[in-house]
Image 1 (cartoon, one colour):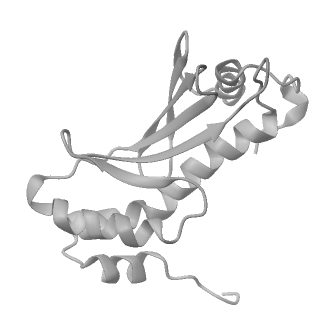
Image 2 (image 1 turned 90 degrees about the horizontal axis):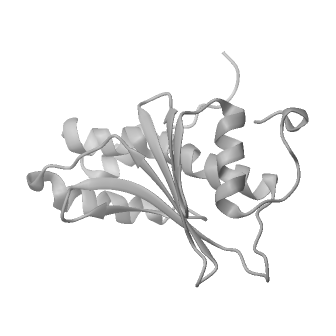
Amino acid sequence: MLDEAEFDREDAAPIDMLENYFAAHGWSHEREDDEIIAKVKGSWTEYELRAIWREDDGVLQFLAFPDIRVPDERRAALYETIGLVNEQLWIGHFELWSASGILLFRHAALIDGEEPVMSLSHAELLVESAIDECERFYPVFQFVLWGGKSPTEAIAAALIETQGEA
């Protein structure tokens, strides 16, 4: 979680807010007019985070790309996995780009108003929920792609929750 004392707490235009958020975390990022791309090291892999602002629609499209490429022969199993995983999500969804075999997490945020702005808490929720879901389900996708598990077995194996204290 970001120390808000180190961050300008004023609401800002969506891409400006995300740029400030990425910079405050020390994440490498590149900015164009209505798009920003950042690289974030997770516990499983590095993620590319990409936000695209569509002013005409008042929509901020937020994408997180785990470093997962799906070979053609594993796509059917991965589509089934994505369906089962997406049933468990409240915000956003995973999808597979058919042309490239790239797996990604996508979420869109409606930001309306005469001068659309994003708060720090909204930026944090958008970014952290995408990273958290990628981290949570990364092992599931790996079990299906490389571990030889069925989608149901992969979810059961990866999402075991421990209870009690060791």
